[in-house]
Length: 249
Image (cartoon, rainbow, N blue to C red; front, side, top):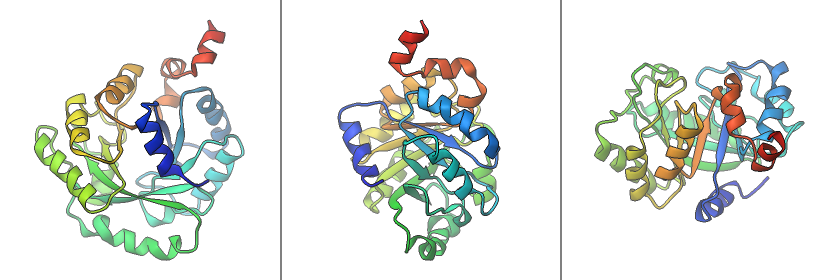
């Protein structure tokens, strides 16, 4: 599947809601994927991300194969390490943790990934990854050994995002982290978006339709939700495709 980035751009220009559902193989059993994907297909989701901070080696391929047997939605790698690179995905967010100062996650892991990516057909999308503090220590913070950016220093967040764009990133990803106590504030999203000429992804701590709507209104081009989609049936019902809501009523 080609043109993933181009489609994100096109949908952003026409203000189409873009929602990615994140599947973490470390937190979901393979046998539960089919049921989960049936929920995703009934929702307004437009993309599936797969990956996590501490995923075991050699299991991502099986998850992608199972996902693709149930849906035609694009499957994009969101890798926490090079062992999560799989040839059978459609693309990869080639992440650089630009909010941190650990060279391994700024460029080291990316260099290690080159031999694995060189002979794949994955669409590689350079992405500046910015971790924002959310009141608790996340797995990203622990694994990457980096400190998240303070929510109160919006100017620094904006400058970091813009620096990512100047470096050639095609996407900027604002992340509150898995299991965040609260999502990134609309004020931060809107100010970062106003500085950028590239699409903005926002994820972490989004557990309600209101959280989702606030992020989109503030300027997020693509919003990411995780296991809240699976765990909260009410949230799922709020994200049904419009035609299915009519049927349900």
